[in-house]
Length: 183
Image: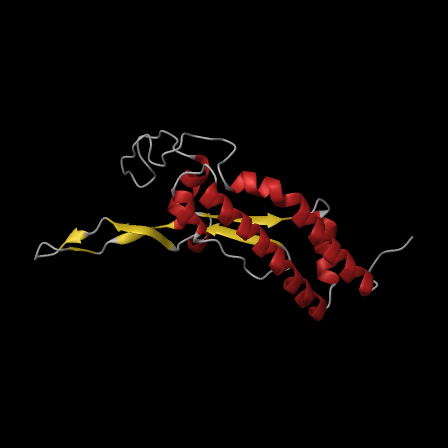
């Protein structure tokens, strides 16, 4: 089971095809080269995150996509990494309880992770969510879309140039450190 802080979250990592070789190479890098790789991978992660934010705002995605996009983070990593969703509260507060004076208290905004799947794939038509709350057929306005509305299409459109740039960064570092295996 996923850790509580990882529930309701998508992690997008752009991994080149030769993943095992890449991880083996990354383990060979000295600490300074790993830091350099983190420094150079971060702008690529931010570029992908920026594309996701624009897609959420200007695509045909459900309106909740803009709320979920507020949760996008690009942790500093040796790989290209974009996290979407999670426990960050987004949107307007809902629910709550009435106190003895009749005033509503304890209202909370929904966590981005609770809106993530519906913002990407639309309404699935389920009568209730996992918490047992009744859902309308148009909870996320848009109908079900298996291909996704904003995350999958954006990643598909941007994966090639971002991955190519990342591979070139790794190759340059490996060449400079003379870690290439020769025949």
